[in-house]
Length: 152
Length: 152
DNA sequence: TCCGGTTCATTGTAGATACAACTTAAGCAT
DNA sequence: ATGCTTAAGTTGTATCTACAATGAACCGGA
Image 1 (cartoon, each protein chain N blue to C red):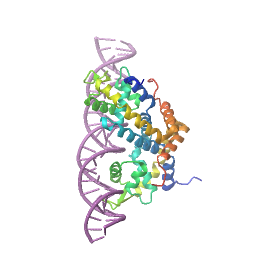
Image 2: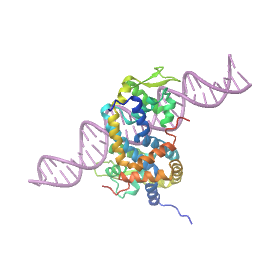
Image 3: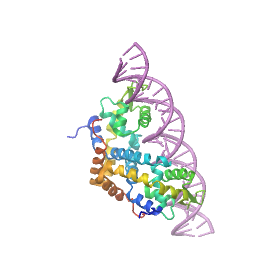
């Protein structure tokens, strides 16, 4: 006989099993780490991620960046807008539009190189927090979600 | 001789090694999963997490919830405000103030039980996406970050 | 060539997130 | 009792995030 699950049982199971609560907590902690390291340069972790993604793509179309990082296109649009305002990236055509490509400006390229030491610092701290196993597991999970695969 | 690291090398290393980019990507994918499952009930994953946390604490003080989920106090303040507006939680004293406690309303308790099937569905999908190993690793990492430990 | 569906990018709206600054209350020490 | 220091909570501001709706350009087939 299945009986109705009580509030306490439900809450208990959710707290002890929920994948989302853990992923989100880890995300907040790790992001805070990188954000702090990058703060002197005026960019956030999200922007750094985009900067790197764009730097690696020969002709970065927004839709492509959006897919590779699993960021909603509208989110990316606004993030890129901020990065344009800071003159770290530019697009061709400059007004945007359909088949635009995004690339780093010289300042953006300089920034990328400049933030590297801070990134290494945050990276080292993150490794300490999550451990070797954690790092490997994240790599595995991200790969499983298609990250790092040359576009579908 | 160490030579200067080029933009491409920097970008490449960051993309291939960065913990943050992976954590954040996984977070977006997983959160989207739970958000979609919970959408019919009008609450987001973040709110569900808080709902569960509050349900499990006898006398949930905001600062305590904030610490246990590693959410900034100001963030929690606004999340709770929304949840009050939906009458899922209430506080005593009702206007907030310093030593308030938060608890679920009867509607909040009903909601918690109601969302369980949707949560189970999202949970199952999440397991499929990240795998047994991923789940175990997340549990390990979160535990390492103090999640699940009875308050410091 | 034109039509219709699809993809792409932006804008409207709403919530999640955090840092800084501020207000207030609690705890402590004398 | 009376201050002092610290913790708690809120508010201002900015960014990140996504869904929905819109407009525009691409791409196939008739």
